[in-house]
Amino acid sequence: MKDMDLNALHRDMTQWRRDLHTHPEFGFEETRTAAFVTEKLRAFGFDEIATGIGGTGIVATLRRGTGNRAIALRADMDALRIAEQSTLPYASQTPGVMHACGHDGHTAMLLGAAKMLHETGDFNGTIRFIFQPAEEWGKGAKAMLADGLLARFPFDEIYGLHNMPGMPIGRFETRAGPVMSAEDNFEITLHGLGGHAARPHATHEVLVAACALVVNLQTIVARRLDPTDIAVVSVTELITDGTRNALPGEARILGDARSFKRDVSAAIEAQMRRITQGIADAYGVAETVTYTHEFVPLINDAAATREALRAAETVVGKDRVAEMKEPIAASEDFAQFLAHVPGCFMFMGNGSESKPLHNSSYDFNDAGLIFGAQFFAEVARQRLSGR
Image 1 (spheres, rainbow, N blue to C red):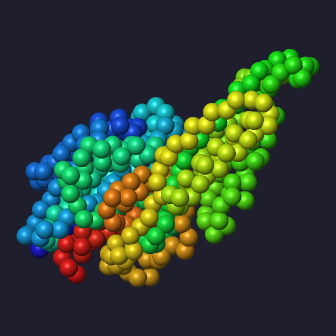
Image 2: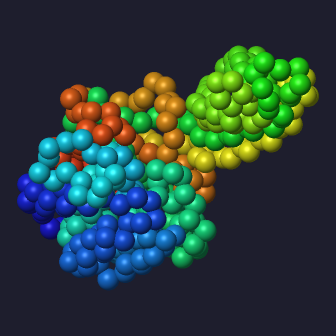
Image 3: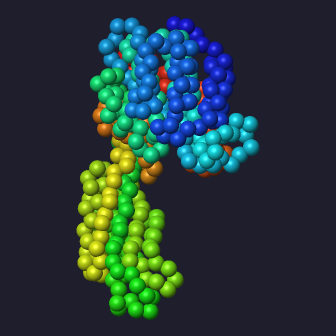
């Protein structure tokens, strides 16, 4: 087994991460990012690199020994449509787009793990390095799966990693079972007859009906779901075509719902449709409901989670690794992979001073890069060595 200069690798990863931060790209537009990743992999010595998977995705394969098991390590590559507010020397040069969620760091860490594992070769089996597009809007994993990911590049387990602001650098946390929620989006449109504000009796205006509907949607979680199930239904927009002296004839109600079980998501949708129909009938207006399942719940496999925690402990020590007490209501496209194969999604610290994710002043903390790369490499070694 060949030893590596981890300090030199950390410096390289920092350079890669800042280059990616300077040139962010939105989902399915990551052409420069994909070319950057491909160039680095070739420089490391990879000769199995598949590009254009699910649009702009990449799958690189590394084989050692005679083992017949394969695991996958995944990083997301896309940025957000947010204008960066910083004076960093490597700030975004793409107007209105920035890496506000740390995917530049995730990509750099997986590249670091790829270099480490290629050079040391201390595993027995196959590793798939998956660089995924379009995580932020929940389309990239599905696109890669639809493009034959599992048939073309089969693997037995998959592991992913995300930075967490507020958590100390070098700390890792995750849990078995539900970790992140499903995200469903809804848009309800009420159709009626608008008219003069002085003559409501001559109309079938929709604003009062819309207000009643917004209030009644809150009963789904409070009264229609098992209180032991965690769920949130949030109305985020109410838009009408009325004006100060004109009653609206159309109202649009938009929002999202979060849950941790598929049957709870289905129950929310069913109750929403029932309540909307009832309100529309009561107020004499028509209704349409569009309900889409954007993200499925992220459920960590128990055995894979034990292995991921063990790998993190090997890297940073038991005192810097913990099991999360509760799941979080944010959503993550990695869940699509876990719906097909067992695996684990891990969180690592981005520092107590880090700005929140999706904030225009956020920046990935380069001090964490080496820990993430080592975690990826260690979980691959352990899962492909029998340790």
